[in-house]
Image (cartoon, rainbow, N blue to C red; front, side):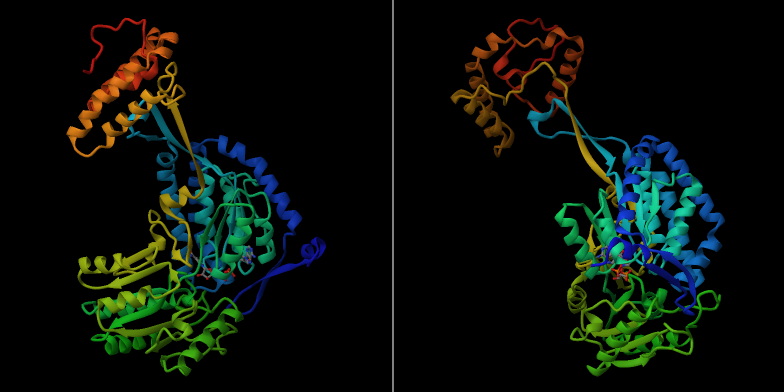
Length: 580
Ligand code: NAD
């Protein structure tokens, strides 16, 4: 095992995947440094939470302003470090974050406002309940390289606006983008200690998990996600897991061929196929199968592969060798098992170290790894189906469940099919763009993860819910407290029947029984007369309470209010509502 000293001198090398150019070397944070960073964040967090939402949203507004001003610079850095075409960096990273900031500014107040919890149970009507949403404390974020800005930024902004401090461990392949996010946040007014970055590889991620963070938000592969979940379980650390996908695209027999084929090509090749929401499996109705393939091949042939900073480029490089090899292996295996390679099918070393030709495969089957494991490369794998039932069965035949899309001219039919697909998101007649809908939750089922980022659900992940309950009759002992006995048991039976017996007759029948039992319980009441009426405030609350109960049903109020403590000495005003 590496010692602390050894880890401290390790470095990550930021590289341009299109050229192999080394951009910068950065020291990895050692486990001790990670602990220190998290402690510092923990100390700074209470003041950040106490700053108040108004000031925090103002800082988010400043962040939005700065990001807008620096959009070209940020998008260029993303392209240099992650390889994607500049326009994709602008749209899927900068724009997504600008809009997420808009969403948080608009919605954080409503979200954090105490939420009234009305009580339906008759016995609990005298209480008021509220949900309070409080920050966890320090949120650790471990993020991947494929959306190195939008993924950690959206998560961090949701954590910050709700009053948490954040420690981000960006992917070792995109540390510079992570550090740039920190600069932007600090320049906007987020205190240094409230948002910090620890640079490093998996060891730094593991150290963050091992530090006193209060929650971990992890985005990455299923394999790492499982390791993270296991480590988190040992200390019952709450985790949000955003993991891999194998998203199916279902092209029904009435789909617009031209639109669906363009969607398939874009959905499979966006960011060189390195998108968790990529179209990884494309199922096409048999009647459209061959024309669909022809159209896709034609459109794929026109795509320009190259350096992301060239404005003509539509597909950039893959992130690294390892990812390229996964794609090569899966394509080669599919070929060997009978898939037809209609376009691409091999690396493009003449363009640079990590380029792979956009590839169209036909006649793929679920016996092939390319239809079962995440490919995460520029491959459009297409298979035919006979009817909607088969398409749904194929879509659901996967360990993953991140997202899916259904293509049809009939919206209702599309929605009916969508409801039967097991996934976190299903889009009808679009793909991937759900990630850019700031209001929409993002996350998967099955191996694709646990929990949701983005939207209101994303904010929910950043808070602990506290239930606050206040009894409005502070001078009244509860009916269900001690003083048990046979008559009390009958009283309870009748009370339960009064609420839940089937039919109005049975319910009303229980009323006198309950009241009769009540009369038996006078002993304690005589000894401890209830003095609730001596307080005008309590009296007005009682009136409100009674009027609500009366409106709700003909409850045996006397019994319910006083139970074994029926007041002996009180004077009721003539206007007091009585229930017979
Ligand atoms: P990865 O799992 O290799 O790494 C993700 C992060 O985890 C990195 O920062 C890495 O350093 C860190 N890490 C590695 N080992 C760790 C450990 N033991 N403890 C803690 N952290 C550790 O994934 P990747 O290659 O960076 O990203 C690609 C994967 O991410 C794909 O599977 C993709 O589908 C998935 N992804 C999912 C979503 C989503 O929203 N569901 C979004 C983007 C990417």
